[in-house]
Image (cartoon, rainbow, N blue to C red; front, side, top):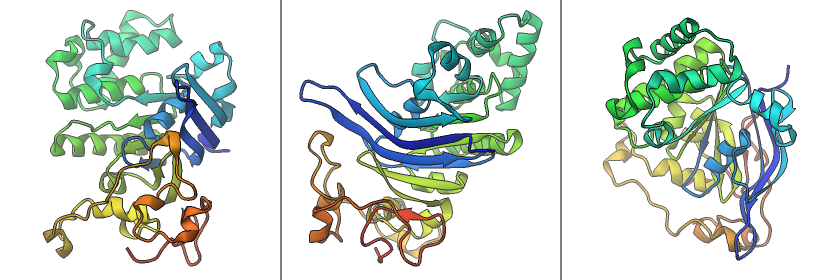
Length: 326
């Protein structure tokens, strides 16, 4: 059986008055059942564009190329009826910012019930009530919260409701786009524990998007690091966090202090400069203008994503100096 999700040479660009702006540039990745794949990177690297494109939710001004296979079906070429049947039932998404994603004038019960009734309109009221209650309990909320409005819930409770909605039609693939944004540290940990438990219990495949590599290393099996719309590193989560190969991944891990690490007594390392303007990408490696290891060869050709000499199987990096000490 193939992977739940296969993304092949995915490109996305947006039309602007100044011409097309590339958001994704040849992204390849896979997700298996029972696996959590983390996607990390700064704002503007393409993480949310990737999340929306998996379910073909990108804006109308986007031009998309490549393939996005969910259970073998290419989402990008499906007709409207087949795409509607796939969303929620085979693949679903947890958006960042639950307060903005939930309808403020509808009760929680009705919002969780909506995808159930869309995919199975003959479901009785009693069955809907039972299913909504089960979903709330599954995400750690009492059934009674189904009668609440979004503003009556805390941030963590609203995020749990979003997760319950994503599970409403028993999909096998869930995309979680920064599900812990704006939550305090304790609630973040609870939500991440919840997501990890659901993957184990339901044998889901999950794409978990975050800017924080330390968060992803705790929850994910593998991690993809993105920069300027490209994958620049891929590997087992613990390996990428503990021993990053790409200078950008090294900078990301260095930005977060580690409890128990003597080096954490000092200020986290910073990364000079800003991400490139995607309208005018530099020649060669897009990270070269910020990279402390850049040499002349880095500015002539963009390096492919390959397994560097001596790296573990399954690890890849897009850097001619991958693996050199930070």
